Length: 469
Image 1 (cartoon, rainbow, N blue to C red):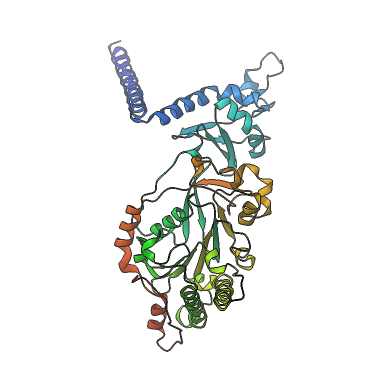
Image 2: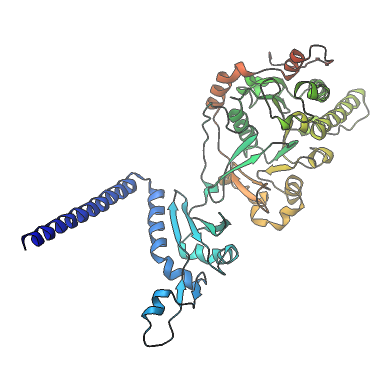
């Protein structure tokens, strides 16, 4: 009897210990949850409460939206328990749902069921938005058998953001981080093997800030070199690239003769790279081995591109000369866009309206990636993004003219159909100046790098570089 009592006491002791551990875990979890909630900002607290409501109401909501499946086959346990022979009641299966939150709303991951997959969730998205009190809801495939449901309570496009460059070399060369989409998800594009990018939009809506971020993020890499033609200034110190010019191996302003000489020099570099590729790289395309400090990706930025291509009308000698230079500029840039990709030359053209008179169509239509900030006319939107933008009225840049949408652009993304809107962040002049100062020592002329490896290569070194100005 004494042994039995001892055993019972031992069992009770283990039981009390187990209960104590469970209570300790529950208390620790509760404290952690409360601390996280208290430390969160007001927007995130709302999202936390929203996520709790979604979890609690999911099993009731899912069948209402036809997001449940009926299983008429009884389980083995139910069959054994059915002694009276009555039909066993079918089970209603509800997709498992895991919900996380952020400042803008919630991200839910759901498990698919037979007959309940991506298509069914996408059809239910508008009703989920109503039930979850979201501005919009998007459903995408996560992994096979799972979907991601993104619901935003607040419109991320209307919240201005800032980007502070880290000064560290990018993990992936030629990966361009653009900003956040309308579901507050990060958006980036892969510019590997891309010949050109066009950026359009009204003045003051974010074109230059977008390009500034590209330079600041890529500047810490010695495998990337920059050259710029800025058509709205005469010298570097007058314009938006005054800080970043230290990280550029060449810069010209609105002078057509200087820009013509620069474009000619870049075409000569392209031709020399073609003849030297197999001898130096051992391959015909630079992208087979990737950019390096000795053979960098050359990013050619042409801001206010219409300055260099505009058709000058007139019969006087000066106007004829300007018209000839503009036509020659178009031919040279066409060469860079159409033939420079495999040699590691990327051309970024920015202008207000990317119509044919601003960027010739034989250049614009070869650039596979196009972005557009606010536009005033449907014609300008179509010129920037193509005819398909007419079928996506919500993403049309003519709807971005409100001041709240400064910094918001529309684009046709590589990884998804249709068009998406992106909130691009602001990069301050102080940050860009700091990055340029830190990385100025990495600046190198690709022509010099090439001749250092092949001293006998024939290159036209005439250079209108006016950095000293």
